[in-house]
Length: 428
View 1 (cartoon, rainbow, N blue to C red):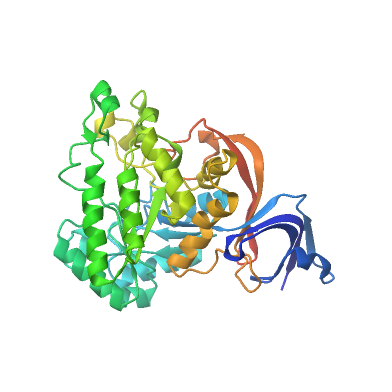
View 2: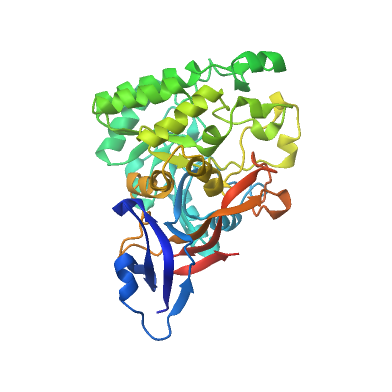
């Protein structure tokens, strides 16, 4: 088995509250030593030694909301291409949403994803299964069989369950299976015709708006049902101050609730829509600056548990349309870490908390390996220059689709090396 020794590294490990200069040793597929104390352990003959020069080593990122076209829309993204994009962005584990064709709602589809990931992906890919068959919002799928086959959560992906009785039953069923229900809350009636955040800017642009209440009303319903059923509920993607207040209140009352936020809603606001650029047509929509700042604060204080990329590849034909007709979504795997580091460089959120939300917390929440640099953990890690400047260029994007919200953006912080199970899968 090969041994790699990283010396003179800034080790950032939220699982131990660790941020110090030290040494990390990888033996085979696992980390065997990590920390300042490891500097004096020496290393075996023949080990590969990497002097990091003070660069940071972080646990590999765990992205809990990624849409992939395969099966059914391989022209937008395949499991293999998503893996390559993830590795370049420092993401070592992906939770793949069930919005495929056919929908991931039975054991055969879960097994297909796992098999394709083993054969073609350079990073870990974990399938999420649909709460309801066909994502239709009516008949529940077989949670127990899906869990046993390898599904790590159940979710409706882009969809919102309108029927509260179906949601109550799903939460109860998932509780008995010890599974997490992850749900995106967008009221299909309140937000049906909207294409961006409701407000003065939408009026100026002549675009129909989506009110904050379209997110907050179904979220409040879900949180009450989670309290009623004692199920494990994850608000997949909140975007408003009223939503974060609802989650905080539910947590304070003892509800088994957690929350996630898209990197887009942390780094961008409705003003970015500007000249009707369709790469900014997203769900949830980009909100006002006050809501964005509320999301940043919610990440900082722990109300929001995880940050995800909301990677959602769309092809040129569906994006090169009038804003109201364009497909919803943007890619995000390759810019995920660098965009999140804006919160650290601005002084808004400490580095340990940023890394926890990107890696340690989602791994813990969804029961995945990784998210830690402690001895015995899988050697899923990234070497990062936290200060390296770079510009997002379309020609450098590895994803099959190029619909990034950060095209031309100036970034600070770049992945130099990505390691999965002790094997280097990306290096600059």
